Image 1 (tube, rainbow over the protein chains, first blue to last red):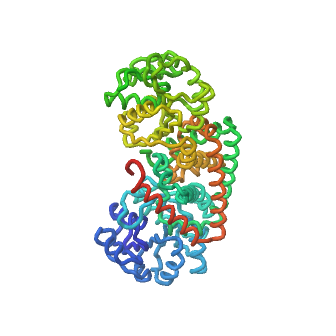
Image 2 (image 1 turned 60 degrees about the vertical axis):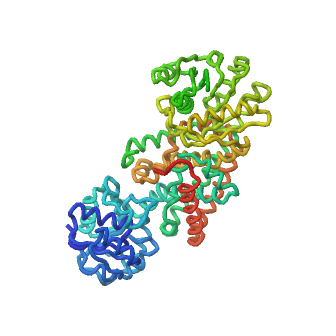
Image 3 (image 1 turned 120 degrees about the horizontal axis):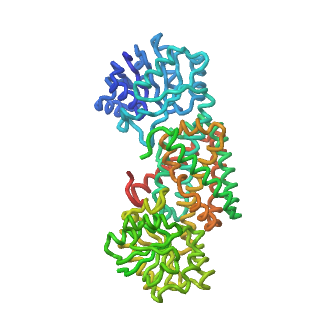
Length: 293
Length: 293
């Protein structure tokens, strides 16, 4: 049970956590914090938070659990703002999509990674953003990856794990570096391809016509290109090495595929497409989370 | 009004046309044709066709309209099978995703492109295939591109245009080469990226884990990788030059994006992502066909 939850960044991710915990009867009081007073007023109206403070130092006063859901580029300043303001037994966790940079930011601010800071990443979220988009069921049956360090307090890890279970999520732990590599491949790379494709087409002279004749598959494929540009800039910068590497390798694969197509090697194309279809169908029917619509 | 429609290839595309025309009361009799007797029996049971013949030469007897919906790789053999079997005033059209290869196949078989052959491409369809997936509303509010040649009979073009209007589709005409370039960018390239991405991830040692931590965006992004491998092999071979070129250029863009990320150029990333988001949002709200769910 959480007596006072401080949510720094009351958007889709932070707002949904507050609503889920409230729905589960797992929190007494929620204090919101953010840069936009209008957004916090809206969160208050929607019943997502009980009160708010715009200064993180104030927001975390007497909180026993602090959830930081700010863009990765604002993580270091947020740590700096709450340093020395936390209750001794307060547990802090976050929702950042890259864990190496969060750990580095903590190190830079605190001189170490505090034992009660549990880096985390809920694999949920969407193109939508803001408290209006927040949803108490966002994390239900979704996976949350926690990346504790050797110095992490096991009791703090357990507390954060239980918090996510209350939201209906499945919790796994993973090494920080491994997390960032896996997410570079499964999330960051697809976003780069979607942003890159739409941008490339938009820059063509006949882009109106191009988009006019795009079919349903294109709409699904490019949905993630509607995601928040600032958030994605931050993710790219924060995960630049693993993402740069996976993107470079993918670019080389596409160059190779282009050559295979040009020389008309149907057997090789068929092999690639069959392997991909089997993996996609298996992923959806098998280990994939959530149901296909 | 169509007295006798011959549909060669009674799958998603051919079956949906037959059902739509029947639903609109625009056809008297539908004759199906295909390699699989079981599929044709099923089409008969479902009421998609009235009778069938496995030999295209027989199926087109006395038909006033012939719709060819076979994979691109089977187009030439289909033309050869119906040569000399058509009624003098029969109009022939097709649903192939690449038009240059269809025109070349016609030329190879007939020695010219017959005046009453109207190459066409309905921009619809999906990962699903087979007559079971056919749907009388598949073409409603969808676009159909017809690519008539200078030698095409205007009356035949008009007949095919009216046929598609009866299905609720919007019909546009386009030059063959231009069609193939536009589709390479909007349809064939995204399919290559989705197939390529899923295949690249499936070949990784930790692919089970990779797919396990993929989020909803990944599911949407890779849906088209469930498409029929044979159909896509044929499309790649048929459209190899435009597709090879657009894929090569995209590969180079990704290599450039990888370098931008690695050097941490946030301003440039933000510019790209903002341009893409604006185009994607504008496409969906604006000129895009169909409604976003």
